[in-house]
Image (cartoon, rainbow, N blue to C red; front, side):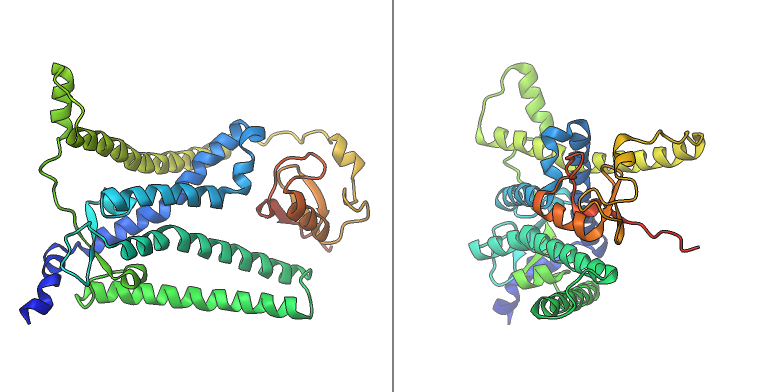
Length: 334
């Protein structure tokens, strides 16, 4: 009996609290919006140079996140957020030490940290797109395309409900001590989170600073690990700093908007006079009026949707645009 339970001893002794695992999950969820905020800043400063990032943000973030998480899994034995909270991953099927994941478990960990959220996000965007088209009456009314759309939307809803319920059950089982893993991803990967072990052979930051000040610093493996640790710690703190700036900007914007007077109505532009009452693409009266927010022009929903799928730009101003920039207009019937 002792041999069978030996591999669980470290997990039981070093298992973090529910608050710590929830905190690292929250940091993981907030890092993507923070990265998007940074990209939006560069796009606003130079849309011609960085405008393509808005069209390929999901793929760019997937590459960046894969590199980041792969580095942390290889050198720290945990994800970016787990390392920040002093946690590591422990393989439950053997008596391995924390942070030393087998190749398969490391690959599975990287998959659930990067590819799985990417696929869920793309599936959710596609489901929302199909739902909007159903509401606007522009979706196929018959045939295999309609059946495929219905199957995808129902499958997404069912999977989302199943995954969220499973996550809740895992939290409750972890809280009651019946499970060593707090999430479905960790359960499928067969790993658990434990407190990270201290590396006594690594230089501390103060020791490295003293060596630099005295001129006795020599590049070595421990010192280089300290430099890398300082750089990664700076990246971790930057995530919180970006979130703070986002909160501060939203608070300032909310306050300033209520304090500023209402501006005068801007003059009618050349494009507005030219395309008044008609769609700039088909040159016919609007059908299902839809505003493209990046240019302020109104199109037929079917026309602008087809154009954005092909070119991802405004047909008049040629500004970069996506389906998320479309705003339905519901004119008054009175």
